[in-house]
Length: 142
Image (tube, rainbow, N blue to C red; front, side):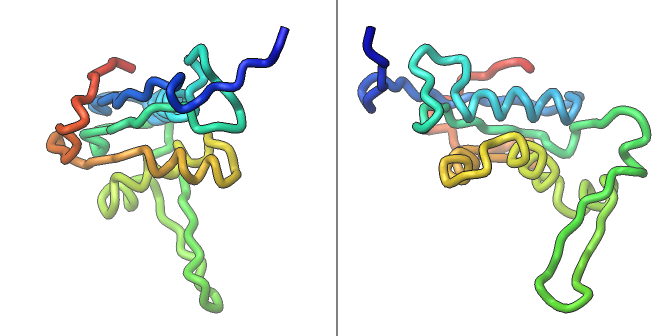
């Protein structure tokens, strides 16, 4: 039996729409990462990009469990001396709510060039409006 290597014509890419209203951050991020990687597809290959495009809307309405709102710390280094900036979950949610989901999903993707390309296929919007209606996204529940 030979190993099946999918070609571009074998890969059927779709666009999924996920509403993050009331969803837990970790469970949402694992589902999004699984769709981006393409793990549920029959033509899955680890060394190819076979995943789908994902659009997440209402990201400011995602919630976390426990005391993570006050305790969870996000770090960012500016590149200058003593340039380490730290933000709590609440601060980052008020400033840039899309960054929370982008960081959670990016840490679940492969740490290679393929993972970088997978992350470009993720679109996160803070409100209910999004610009990707032309792709005819399929709405799914997490």
